[in-house]
Image (cartoon, rainbow, N blue to C red; front, top):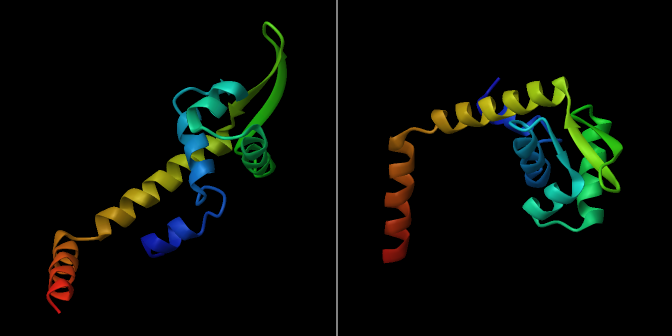
Length: 116
């Protein structure tokens, strides 16, 4: 499969907010809702909507915990780890498939269009 097809095939991680959530969770394993909300600068409702999509697809688990008061903890699942790493690998492959020559041609084309 072409690298672009691999990237476009994942509709869950193709969303930048959900990808950001997973990339933040990947090295940590778990995080509190409030921390994730602050880091991503999202409203509680917006974050909750994205988390529900990730949970529905098996990427995360949410659990109510008692810390100093009731809070929501988000845990990355093994599926979430595998799929996030697969998606990042596909992005790297896509970027690697774009050669320096190709980007150079785009730069020269944009310069020509400015002269017209």
